[in-house]
Image 1 (cartoon, each protein chain N blue to C red):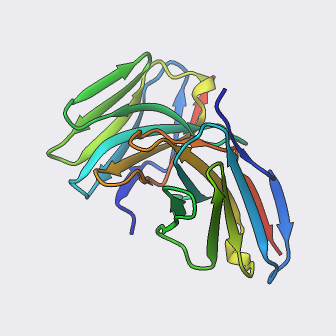
Image 2: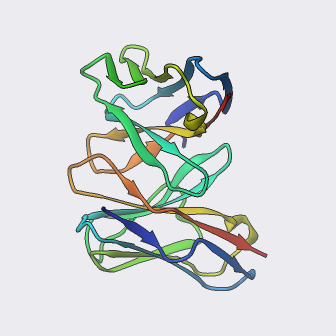
Length: 112
Length: 112
């Protein structure tokens, strides 16, 4: 069964910490995405990548960066965590040209 | 810049009833309209999708109705069951690139 795996289900971090969220897919997908999910706001795109070492800003990139050194791994980095970054973070992947996403189960991040 | 508007935010339906969730979009370049279903603690999963060259698509109890001129599409769940209780997201994809723009989400509760 195809999988997108997010390394942590729950994380609690302190304000100002550097936070790494890891995502790995085993489907050889070209595209990978990071969304955050907040009640009433739906899923908002933070960053995405169409290929190794490529990255594109989504709708809300401020305060975040990403890294894609290998095709299967896409990391989201919070350079200096703030309380307004408390959220559910979802990673997804898809094949080039295909429209369906496969999502991971999410990481619920709390910044205190 | 929310380009896909979804309503209602929450919906309560009795078992056996019809659940209807509506979405409206602005970008006429969108060419693919999926619906995702998300259960608590899980990532969203593709439920059903439609392209704008058809007005309706049915898969079991789930039907998408699409109105291109009104730039609206809706999800109908016939004979709703308690197991359908979940959060539903509509989405849309432009003709360039693979990124999806999501609606705000609808939390559906089907009472037994």
